[in-house]
Length: 482
Image 1 (cartoon, rainbow, N blue to C red):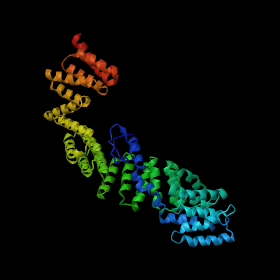
Image 2 (cartoon, one colour):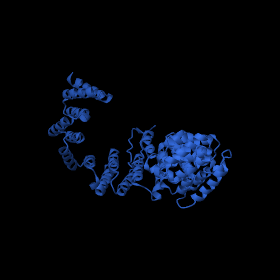
Image 3 (cartoon, rainbow, N blue to C red):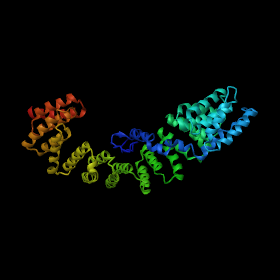
């Protein structure tokens, strides 16, 4: 399905939605960058340490440190005495370090496996993650089926080291050994997300939710897994569930709007953005998007209002290029008055923030608006100024040529030919310049010269359009000179 709408990328730049580009292709370029961006990180995966310190996670981690939970692993009577001392030391200020000093001298090749496990646990308490990993690995060498050691080590890998590749088989092993902890499924989902294995992430997040549907992080993770697979209908269902509890969260509303765009449902996307606007959470990016959707749905006045609001909110001029492109899109839809209003707002609000390239774009757009409105006295001097600044500005050369050709006078045709000849020296404008000059020759009745030019243009670009034009002019020429 061809579509015309756009979304926001990870850097906050509103994409221009071209009429002939696929909506879902653009969504792939935008939403899925966003899901891996700082915006998503702030919502979910970037808060891993914070998430893993939440009560339900702390309870899960704490339970994994119970040495006596697995009956087949036991301590000697002497080790039990030491273990009780360690538990008392841990409660003191700087307890983990004190406990390690007591424990490490007792570790011997014939020590019970749980002592190595407990050493790993103590090191993992903000002391030395690498040492913690070493002791957990040693524990699992001694007892590969030590479930709590597997869970503690996988937690460390995700929580501290972000080593998702190593964590995945450990978490799978924990589940195979009978773990029915929601956190194990949730952490496995998080690992799969970071490894971009989205279908696996979806599967385990659904299981985590079955085990405990109250944990918001699993529902958010499921949403990311769904949207990363372009499962927009399922994404919408999941987001609506989340929004029942998080109705004030504009980021989820924004993601919902993008999912509606994924379904090519711009009206629902716009309605969702209106909710964001009503929450007072609209950004320059979302306002720009609302303008684009409104424009392409034919609501030009509303589009202009949103575009202007977007410019006014952009105090740093970060979306200057997007604002200028919006003004140009307005013009391409024949709304030169609204385009002029938007351009005036841009120049008033952020003229000092525009780069040299953006300033030239603005000047060129101003000339186009003037041409579209018939204000040649304003447009021609601007175009000449642009050409004086850059003699290779093919677009301005062609606009000047078109203006002078349109005068229909001998002097005008002469000026037009000069500009066309200059433009044809640039490869990217060559064919347009040659065809423009051919049209000027046809208007002057110089069909023989026009045919030579059209044939030349066809040699560079053998398109149906040029072939059709060539045949039409040739027929007229033959009719006149039979």
